[in-house]
Amino acid sequence: MTNKKGVNNMYPYLQRLGRSLMLPVAVLPVAALMLGIGYAIDPQGWGGNNQLSALLVTAGDTILSNLGILFALGVALGMSNDRDGSSALSGMVAFLMVTTLLNPDKLTNIVGIPVEEFSSAFTKINNPFIGMISGLTAASVYNKFSKTRLPDAFAFFAGRRLVPIITSLVMVLVSGILYFVWPLVYDGLVSFGTWISGMGWFGAALYGFFNRLLIPTGLHHALNAVFWFDLIGINDIGNFWQSAGVKGVTGMYQAGFFPVMMFGLPAACLAMYRKADPKYRKQVGSLYLAAAVTAFVTGVTEPIEFTFMFVAPVLFLAHAFLTMLSLGFAALMQWTAGFGFSAGAIDFALSSQVPIANKPFMLLLQGLVFAGLYYVVFSFLIEKMDLASPGRKGPLAGEGVIESNESVESTTSEKEYQQARKILEGLGGKNNIDNLTNCATRLRLNVKNTDIIDQEKIQNAGAAGVKIMGKNSAHVIIGTNVQFVADALQDVLDEENKD
Image 1: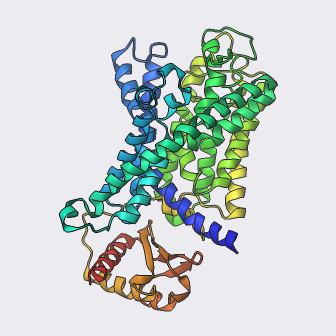
Image 2 (image 1 turned 60 degrees about the vertical axis):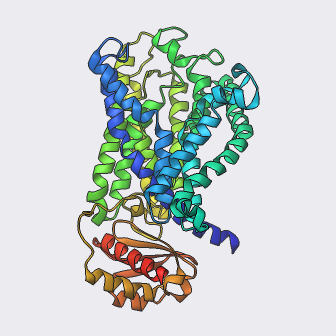
């Protein structure tokens, strides 16, 4: 019973996290396209030989190099109860605190150890995983302390102003824990990568699996350093572009990504689009199209992966397994190509001309096969397991990761206030409400007890339906005007809390 309850409570939590990440993830396609075009203009100098290339590369890299802080802001805002801007400020404070305290240049003064003696893990502390930790911590602090009252002498620092202060103190403790934990995890992955590097094509397959699996944590960079760069002598990227090494072997830790990024994940987008509820396809279509084009052209896949890695972890596990198959098979067949930016069409066209590339165009044929595999696997899993994905309808509906696109300039009418009051009565009153958010068509509520919800009363108030998601979670289906009803319901709650 306990495990079932924990699972029931975890799904809404993961869906909220997935929705929160959509804000920073939405900007990734344009960043990737700017980088891809800039790299295509000047593939050797990356802006060193062309001013337009330098502009595009710098602009795109500004976003991709700061994913950590973007994730901290987005997660803190999205996971806070009322999405107030002070939660985002706290997320930024949290991220700046941990990344500054664990910066080797600062650590050397704090712990009295020379910079060169610190683990290389601390040079990789600015990553999306740390961003998510910072955002979740800030949101938790905000939800607990944003309404805290202080004595009159300190009243200025009460409420929302108190949140960044407490967050900064909490992050000192979190930084202390990470000081010991982060190097163990990072260095352990480097050792693991060194071990599997001697396994030939099977090692390439394992690398592909863990490379994808570690994407949410940012720790895939530890594995990449082993295989792509000159950490232990492999230097797969450097040797490929210098056309050094062994034909059919050099590039084996890069080649298998091309079928996945150019063909597999765009096909996954098509599968998720086809499995979306027809009424939401128009909304999610632009998301999937932009992400698919970005993946094919530039090889940047985060805009796709972050749409389902939290709301439907099974899909992400399947993605990691298919990536493992792709890298292993390409390495077994000794089909090689390389990339300087990522495994997209731009890099493929450039790398196919490098003399050490071995039968690179066979990777395109492999890509077509993997497009079919991704489409079939994703379609099957979504349908049979009723998995959440953006636009999907059902008990684990993923439409919650889509923000409502209704005009924020419209005003809430008295009709919505009357409807909100009746819905609140049906929900068991203000004391039964822990948290209120909304997606494209639904009110999404965390409540103390769903047993006291009067579904008939809520439907009589004009709701299309009520879905009980577990002991503490419920959805009220409103329709496309849900934003106005949600605003009215929040206002009613605020008014009653003041009484």
